[in-house]
Image (cartoon, rainbow, N blue to C red):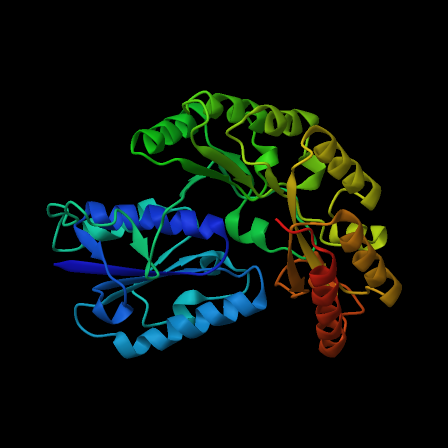
Length: 361
C-alpha cells in the first residue's frame, strides 16, 4: 500500500492546488495518511507571500531530511519554486522533484516516470476522497483563474504565479456541476482577483446559481480587488439566493498616499463607495478585509487614518499583517523602510482597534 502526505502553507489557492495534487496521487493508488512519518511520498506546498510563511515552509522542508531514506520521495510545490532569487535545488538538495503553482500535471509526469506504474486505486468505500495535512477537505474549491496583473508594489504573487489566466467558463461550469452531482453543497470560486475573471464573474455566478436546486447550496468567491468590484457583481450577490452574502475585499490601508505607494489602483473614497453600494443592495452583507501596517514611509498620521478606517467600515473580520519585504517587488527598493519595532507596535495597535470595532458575524 502506497501512502502520501501533503503539507500546505498559504491561502485557499494553495489548498485548491493541494487538492488537485491529492487527486493525482489517488489516481496512482496512493492513500492519504495523517503523519509524514507514515508516507512514501511527501509533498510540501509552499507560500512566499510573507516572510513568516516562507520561513515556516523552508524550515519544514529542511526538517524532512530526517525522513529521507530509500522508498521515501519528497516533492516541493507551490510559490517557492518560482520565487525570484531563490535556487530551490541548491537550497534543498534532498528534495526529489519540484512542482510550480497550479501545475498538478508535473506530478502526473513524475509518477508516470517511476518504475512502478499506476495500480488500481486503493481508496475504498468509506475512505476520504482527498486528504492532506492531516485534514479532510470538506468544502470544494474551484479555481476559476490564476495569476495576477495588478503588481501591487509589496506583492510577489505576479512573479511566482504569473499573469492572469482565466479558465473557460464551460470548463468551470462542468467542474461545478460534477461537484454538485457528487453531493457537494458548498462551492468556493478562487482566484487572486476573481472580480477580474475574463468571462465575467457576475455571468458565472448567475449560471452556477441555476445549477443548484432552489434554496440548496452555497456559492462563495474570493479574493475580490476593490477596483474591480463592479455593480454587476454586487447585483448578482444581491439577487442570487445561493450566493453567500459575504465578500473578501482587502482595504490594505486607510491612507491615500500609502494606497498610491502600494499601487492599489483606488483611493479611500472609491473603496467607501463600493462598501456603500454593497450595503445598499445587500444590507446583511459581511465584509472581510486585509490590512498591512508598516509599509515603507508610512507615517504615524497615515497609520492613524487606517485605524479610523477600520472603525468606520465595521468589517466582520480583518486579516492583519506587518509589511514584509519581498524580493523583486517595487516596495522592496523604496527608501524609509520602517524599523521592525515600529511595525510591531503598529500591528499591536491595529489588533486592539480591530477587537474594539469589528462587527460581529
